[in-house]
Image 1 (cartoon, helix red, strand yellow):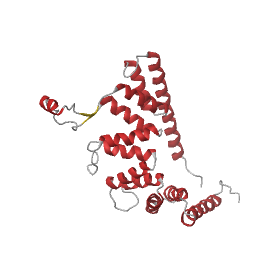
Image 2: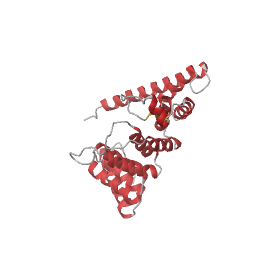
Image 3: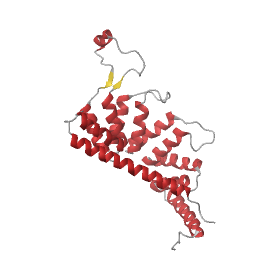
Image 4: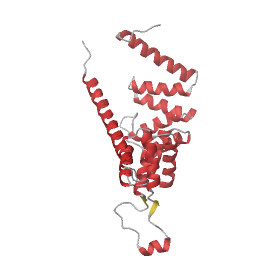
Length: 257
């Protein structure tokens, strides 16, 4: 049957039929990819976050579907899908980790960020080396944000002691041969990660790359390349502004009576 999506009645019928097809594909045919689509349908169209959460959770637990693990991780983190529920970072991390093990780049990004953060989430034990492994895996799967974070971590290094605490004494350094850093500063690696993130269209990485070329950090100084990446970052910024303006315009439109 052909639907005229300009007609409200046809749109409603199409949406309802879509939901029936997803339920059949999930519950009768037991297809995990269709179950995930059912979760997206319940979330995006029906706005039934409680049912969506259940579908994402079961699709992850029962079928090991990576995208659903990531989505339920988000629900757990935000406390979404349960009325009056607070976020549960520990549960979220377990689903992000599972999603990462199943090769979802976004799940690797989020599990990595939870592990490397200093004090944002006290429920999660900080484990920078493991977090870097997750972020590296995400970057290897072309997640631009993961590559950008890895670049930043190599620009500043990662200290063992939280910011604000007393630095290691000379005696401690001699005794333990400890530099005070879990991850050493490495501008060459920072440059390489920024290059990849910029290629993947991360605006902030392109801006950093411009600065690195201008200063000769991690690469040879090159004003021409610095200007090239500065221009690219500005073009990306303009694109983002245009997209935001278009979205605001669309949200401002009212349907005719």
